[in-house]
Length: 279
Ligand code: NAP
Image 1 (cartoon, rainbow, N blue to C red):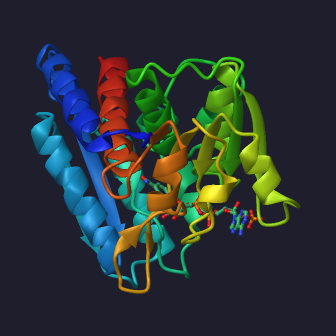
Image 2: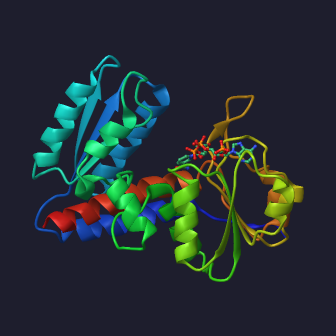
Protein backbone atom coordinates (compact mmCIF):
# COMPACT_ATOMS: atom_id res chain seq x y z
CA UNK A 1 0.00 0.00 0.00
CA UNK A 2 1.31 3.46 -0.86
CA UNK A 3 2.45 5.63 2.05
CA UNK A 4 0.35 8.41 3.54
CA UNK A 5 1.70 11.70 2.30
CA UNK A 6 2.23 14.16 5.13
CA UNK A 7 0.87 17.49 3.97
CA UNK A 8 3.16 20.10 5.50
CA UNK A 9 1.64 22.86 3.43
CA UNK A 10 -1.87 22.34 4.79
CA UNK A 11 -0.62 21.91 8.35
CA UNK A 12 1.47 25.09 8.09
CA UNK A 13 -1.64 27.03 7.05
CA UNK A 14 -3.48 25.64 10.08
CA UNK A 15 -0.62 26.56 12.43
CA UNK A 16 -0.41 30.09 11.02
CA UNK A 17 -4.17 30.49 11.53
CA UNK A 18 -3.73 29.51 15.17
CA UNK A 19 -0.79 31.90 15.54
CA UNK A 20 -2.86 34.74 14.11
CA UNK A 21 -5.73 34.09 16.51
CA UNK A 22 -3.30 34.08 19.46
CA UNK A 23 -1.51 37.19 18.23
CA UNK A 24 -4.80 39.07 17.99
CA UNK A 25 -5.40 38.38 21.67
CA UNK A 26 -2.13 40.10 22.65
CA UNK A 27 -2.05 43.73 23.76
CA UNK A 28 0.63 44.54 21.19
CA UNK A 29 1.39 43.43 17.61
CA UNK A 30 4.39 41.03 17.42
CA UNK A 31 7.23 42.42 15.29
CA UNK A 32 9.89 40.59 13.25
CA UNK A 33 12.94 42.19 11.62
CA UNK A 34 14.62 40.29 8.80
CA UNK A 35 18.14 41.18 7.67
CA UNK A 36 19.27 40.15 4.21
CA UNK A 37 22.84 40.87 3.09
CA UNK A 38 23.70 40.56 -0.60
CA UNK A 39 21.62 39.34 -3.51
CA UNK A 40 21.45 35.55 -3.16
CA UNK A 41 18.28 34.68 -5.17
CA UNK A 42 17.31 31.75 -2.90
CA UNK A 43 17.65 33.96 0.18
CA UNK A 44 15.46 36.58 -1.48
CA UNK A 45 12.74 33.94 -2.01
CA UNK A 46 12.97 32.86 1.64
CA UNK A 47 12.78 36.45 2.90
CA UNK A 48 9.75 37.19 0.72
CA UNK A 49 8.10 34.06 2.13
CA UNK A 50 8.76 35.18 5.69
CA UNK A 51 7.28 38.63 5.01
CA UNK A 52 4.18 36.98 3.58
CA UNK A 53 3.88 34.72 6.62
CA UNK A 54 4.13 37.75 8.95
CA UNK A 55 1.30 39.47 7.08
CA UNK A 56 -0.77 36.29 7.27
CA UNK A 57 -0.22 36.06 11.04
CA UNK A 58 -1.01 39.75 11.59
CA UNK A 59 2.59 40.55 12.60
CA UNK A 60 4.51 43.74 11.95
CA UNK A 61 7.59 43.04 9.82
CA UNK A 62 10.60 45.03 8.72
CA UNK A 63 13.12 44.08 6.08
CA UNK A 64 16.71 45.32 5.86
CA UNK A 65 18.01 44.43 2.39
CA UNK A 66 21.66 45.48 2.57
CA UNK A 67 24.38 45.46 -0.09
CA UNK A 68 26.83 42.54 -0.17
CA UNK A 69 29.69 44.84 0.89
CA UNK A 70 28.03 45.83 4.20
CA UNK A 71 30.63 45.66 6.97
CA UNK A 72 30.58 43.58 10.14
CA UNK A 73 30.47 46.78 12.19
CA UNK A 74 27.47 48.16 10.30
CA UNK A 75 25.60 44.91 10.85
CA UNK A 76 26.50 44.76 14.53
CA UNK A 77 25.19 48.32 14.92
CA UNK A 78 21.94 47.43 13.18
CA UNK A 79 21.49 44.33 15.36
CA UNK A 80 22.18 46.43 18.45
CA UNK A 81 19.50 48.95 17.43
CA UNK A 82 17.00 46.16 16.79
CA UNK A 83 17.95 44.53 20.10
CA UNK A 84 16.91 47.67 21.96
CA UNK A 85 13.67 48.39 20.07
CA UNK A 86 10.50 47.51 21.95
CA UNK A 87 8.38 46.98 18.83
CA UNK A 88 10.74 44.28 17.50
CA UNK A 89 10.32 40.88 19.15
CA UNK A 90 12.35 38.75 16.76
CA UNK A 91 15.49 39.35 14.69
CA UNK A 92 16.39 37.04 11.87
CA UNK A 93 19.64 37.18 9.94
CA UNK A 94 19.10 35.36 6.65
CA UNK A 95 21.92 32.86 6.01
CA UNK A 96 24.30 32.49 4.34
CA UNK A 97 25.95 35.90 4.72
CA UNK A 98 28.78 36.99 2.38
CA UNK A 99 32.16 35.44 3.17
CA UNK A 100 33.86 38.55 4.57
CA UNK A 101 31.38 38.55 7.48
CA UNK A 102 31.73 36.58 10.71
CA UNK A 103 28.39 34.77 10.72
CA UNK A 104 28.77 33.32 14.21
CA UNK A 105 29.64 36.68 15.77
CA UNK A 106 26.57 38.23 14.13
CA UNK A 107 24.26 35.46 15.30
CA UNK A 108 25.66 35.72 18.81
CA UNK A 109 25.01 39.47 18.83
CA UNK A 110 21.25 38.90 18.56
CA UNK A 111 19.68 39.11 22.01
CA UNK A 112 18.70 35.55 23.06
CA UNK A 113 15.10 36.59 23.75
CA UNK A 114 14.85 37.87 20.15
CA UNK A 115 16.69 34.91 18.60
CA UNK A 116 13.65 33.40 16.85
CA UNK A 117 15.83 31.12 14.69
CA UNK A 118 17.21 29.55 17.90
CA UNK A 119 20.86 29.79 16.87
CA UNK A 120 22.26 31.67 19.90
CA UNK A 121 24.38 29.46 22.20
CA UNK A 122 22.09 30.36 25.11
CA UNK A 123 19.04 28.98 23.31
CA UNK A 124 20.97 25.97 21.99
CA UNK A 125 22.00 25.27 25.59
CA UNK A 126 18.41 25.59 26.81
CA UNK A 127 17.39 23.08 24.16
CA UNK A 128 20.19 20.73 25.18
CA UNK A 129 19.11 20.64 28.83
CA UNK A 130 15.41 20.48 27.97
CA UNK A 131 14.37 23.92 29.23
CA UNK A 132 11.39 25.71 27.71
CA UNK A 133 12.10 28.36 25.08
CA UNK A 134 12.54 28.78 21.36
CA UNK A 135 12.76 25.61 19.31
CA UNK A 136 14.83 25.44 16.11
CA UNK A 137 12.32 25.91 13.29
CA UNK A 138 13.03 22.98 10.96
CA UNK A 139 13.32 20.23 13.60
CA UNK A 140 10.33 21.69 15.47
CA UNK A 141 8.34 21.61 12.22
CA UNK A 142 9.19 17.92 11.83
CA UNK A 143 8.01 17.16 15.39
CA UNK A 144 4.77 19.06 14.82
CA UNK A 145 4.07 17.03 11.69
CA UNK A 146 4.60 13.77 13.58
CA UNK A 147 2.23 14.98 16.27
CA UNK A 148 -0.41 15.96 13.72
CA UNK A 149 -0.31 12.49 12.16
CA UNK A 150 -0.50 10.75 15.54
CA UNK A 151 3.05 9.38 15.36
CA UNK A 152 4.62 9.08 18.81
CA UNK A 153 8.43 8.77 18.62
CA UNK A 154 8.60 7.14 22.09
CA UNK A 155 10.49 3.86 21.92
CA UNK A 156 10.93 4.10 18.15
CA UNK A 157 14.26 3.91 16.38
CA UNK A 158 14.94 7.26 14.74
CA UNK A 159 17.79 7.58 12.25
CA UNK A 160 18.83 11.07 11.20
CA UNK A 161 21.07 11.60 8.19
CA UNK A 162 22.99 14.83 8.75
CA UNK A 163 24.62 16.42 11.82
CA UNK A 164 24.42 20.14 11.09
CA UNK A 165 23.71 22.66 13.83
CA UNK A 166 20.60 23.78 11.96
CA UNK A 167 18.94 20.42 11.32
CA UNK A 168 20.60 17.14 12.31
CA UNK A 169 21.83 17.85 15.85
CA UNK A 170 18.75 19.74 17.11
CA UNK A 171 16.53 17.15 15.42
CA UNK A 172 18.27 14.46 17.44
CA UNK A 173 17.70 16.40 20.66
CA UNK A 174 13.99 16.86 19.95
CA UNK A 175 13.58 13.17 19.09
CA UNK A 176 15.41 12.23 22.27
CA UNK A 177 13.15 14.55 24.24
CA UNK A 178 10.23 12.54 22.86
CA UNK A 179 11.91 9.30 23.96
CA UNK A 180 13.03 7.95 20.58
CA UNK A 181 16.21 5.87 20.33
CA UNK A 182 18.33 8.10 18.12
CA UNK A 183 21.15 7.41 15.65
CA UNK A 184 22.86 10.27 13.82
CA UNK A 185 24.53 9.45 10.49
CA UNK A 186 26.91 11.64 8.52
CA UNK A 187 29.34 11.51 5.61
CA UNK A 188 31.74 9.19 7.50
CA UNK A 189 29.04 6.73 8.59
CA UNK A 190 29.80 3.16 7.52
CA UNK A 191 26.84 1.11 6.30
CA UNK A 192 24.31 3.90 5.86
CA UNK A 193 21.86 1.52 4.21
CA UNK A 194 21.87 -0.87 7.18
CA UNK A 195 21.42 2.02 9.61
CA UNK A 196 18.48 3.35 7.61
CA UNK A 197 16.86 -0.07 7.34
CA UNK A 198 16.59 -0.14 11.14
CA UNK A 199 14.72 3.18 11.26
CA UNK A 200 11.09 3.42 12.31
CA UNK A 201 11.47 7.14 11.68
CA UNK A 202 14.01 8.21 9.08
CA UNK A 203 14.93 11.90 8.79
CA UNK A 204 16.99 12.72 5.70
CA UNK A 205 18.88 16.02 5.88
CA UNK A 206 22.07 15.53 3.87
CA UNK A 207 21.31 17.74 0.89
CA UNK A 208 22.20 14.95 -1.58
CA UNK A 209 19.67 14.14 -4.27
CA UNK A 210 18.87 10.42 -4.48
CA UNK A 211 20.89 9.48 -1.38
CA UNK A 212 18.02 7.50 0.13
CA UNK A 213 16.77 4.80 -2.23
CA UNK A 214 13.71 2.61 -1.76
CA UNK A 215 15.79 -0.38 -0.61
CA UNK A 216 17.06 1.65 2.38
CA UNK A 217 13.61 2.00 3.89
CA UNK A 218 12.05 -0.33 6.45
CA UNK A 219 8.52 -1.31 5.40
CA UNK A 220 6.00 0.98 7.09
CA UNK A 221 8.60 3.50 8.28
CA UNK A 222 7.96 7.23 8.62
CA UNK A 223 10.19 9.02 6.10
CA UNK A 224 10.82 12.72 6.64
CA UNK A 225 12.72 14.44 3.84
CA UNK A 226 14.15 17.73 5.07
CA UNK A 227 16.43 18.38 2.12
CA UNK A 228 15.78 21.01 -0.52
CA UNK A 229 17.96 20.18 -3.49
CA UNK A 230 17.75 20.91 -7.20
CA UNK A 231 17.87 17.93 -9.52
CA UNK A 232 19.52 17.87 -12.97
CA UNK A 233 16.44 19.58 -14.49
CA UNK A 234 16.56 22.30 -11.83
CA UNK A 235 13.47 20.96 -10.08
CA UNK A 236 13.20 21.13 -6.29
CA UNK A 237 13.65 17.70 -4.70
CA UNK A 238 14.75 16.01 -1.49
CA UNK A 239 17.30 13.34 -0.55
CA UNK A 240 14.77 10.52 -0.85
CA UNK A 241 13.79 8.77 -4.08
CA UNK A 242 10.17 9.62 -3.56
CA UNK A 243 8.41 7.26 -6.00
CA UNK A 244 10.23 4.16 -4.74
CA UNK A 245 10.06 5.18 -1.08
CA UNK A 246 6.34 5.88 -1.26
CA UNK A 247 5.70 2.22 -2.10
CA UNK A 248 7.49 1.01 1.04
CA UNK A 249 7.08 3.68 3.73
CA UNK A 250 4.03 4.09 5.96
CA UNK A 251 4.24 7.90 5.90
CA UNK A 252 6.33 10.22 3.78
CA UNK A 253 6.83 13.96 3.35
CA UNK A 254 6.88 15.43 -0.16
CA UNK A 255 9.43 17.98 -1.41
CA UNK A 256 8.17 20.63 -1.89
CA UNK A 257 5.16 20.85 0.41
CA UNK A 258 6.51 18.93 3.41
CA UNK A 259 9.04 20.23 5.91
CA UNK A 260 9.67 23.58 4.14
CA UNK A 261 6.30 25.22 4.93
CA UNK A 262 6.43 23.84 8.48
CA UNK A 263 9.80 25.53 9.06
CA UNK A 264 8.23 28.87 8.16
CA UNK A 265 5.22 28.25 10.39
CA UNK A 266 7.51 27.47 13.34
CA UNK A 267 9.28 30.80 12.83
CA UNK A 268 5.92 32.48 13.29
CA UNK A 269 5.33 30.48 16.48
CA UNK A 270 8.71 31.55 17.82
CA UNK A 271 7.96 35.19 17.03
CA UNK A 272 4.65 34.89 18.88
CA UNK A 273 6.49 33.33 21.84
CA UNK A 274 9.01 36.20 21.80
CA UNK A 275 6.16 38.75 21.81
CA UNK A 276 4.59 36.95 24.79
CA UNK A 277 7.92 37.01 26.65
CA UNK A 278 8.22 40.74 25.96
CA UNK A 279 4.71 41.39 27.34
P1 NAP B 1 24.75 20.77 5.83
O1 NAP B 1 25.16 21.73 6.86
O2 NAP B 1 25.44 20.73 4.51
O3 NAP B 1 24.82 19.30 6.47
C1 NAP B 1 24.63 18.16 5.72
C2 NAP B 1 24.87 16.95 6.58
O4 NAP B 1 24.67 15.78 5.80
C3 NAP B 1 26.29 16.87 7.13
O5 NAP B 1 26.25 16.48 8.49
C4 NAP B 1 26.95 15.81 6.26
O6 NAP B 1 27.92 15.04 6.95
C5 NAP B 1 25.79 14.91 5.93
N1 NAP B 1 26.00 14.21 4.67
C6 NAP B 1 26.36 14.74 3.48
N2 NAP B 1 26.51 13.77 2.55
C7 NAP B 1 26.23 12.60 3.18
C8 NAP B 1 26.21 11.25 2.77
N3 NAP B 1 26.52 10.91 1.52
N4 NAP B 1 25.88 10.31 3.68
C9 NAP B 1 25.56 10.65 4.94
N5 NAP B 1 25.57 11.92 5.40
C10 NAP B 1 25.89 12.88 4.52
O7 NAP B 1 23.21 20.94 5.47
P2 NAP B 1 21.95 21.44 6.36
O8 NAP B 1 22.01 22.92 6.52
O9 NAP B 1 21.79 20.58 7.55
O10 NAP B 1 20.79 21.11 5.33
C11 NAP B 1 20.57 19.80 4.87
C12 NAP B 1 19.51 19.82 3.79
O11 NAP B 1 18.29 20.29 4.36
C13 NAP B 1 19.80 20.73 2.62
O12 NAP B 1 19.23 20.17 1.45
C14 NAP B 1 19.05 22.01 2.97
O13 NAP B 1 18.67 22.75 1.83
C15 NAP B 1 17.85 21.43 3.65
N6 NAP B 1 17.19 22.33 4.62
C16 NAP B 1 15.85 22.40 4.53
C17 NAP B 1 15.16 23.18 5.42
C18 NAP B 1 13.68 23.23 5.32
O14 NAP B 1 13.06 24.14 5.83
N7 NAP B 1 13.06 22.24 4.67
C19 NAP B 1 15.85 23.90 6.40
C20 NAP B 1 17.24 23.77 6.49
C21 NAP B 1 17.91 22.96 5.59
P3 NAP B 1 29.32 15.70 7.51
O15 NAP B 1 28.91 16.43 8.75
O16 NAP B 1 30.16 14.52 7.79
O17 NAP B 1 29.83 16.59 6.44
